Length: 119
Image (cartoon, rainbow, N blue to C red; front, side, top):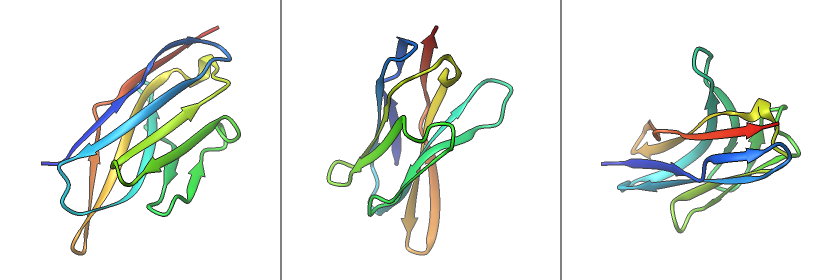
């Protein structure tokens, strides 16, 4: 049973920083891309950042230069360092993990972690 668990959310003031973690457990197969998404209730979930198994990262334009995604493959864990936070970054942040099962790519989501930025 694959489990994806986010942590590190919380409340900060504008200009502050938070570091989110995404821990994957229970997988017997290779973990492929890991993505961080965010969603405000009533809106579509949007991709914030993603990272490949080799560490190639991609970012949404809105977070480039402020957020950094990384991963530790030995720990099956990914991170999202968020700096210079603004109230517009307030959202629930989700981690999506893709796992290659032979030839099939399965996706697993965490339960989300709330990030609140006050002005």
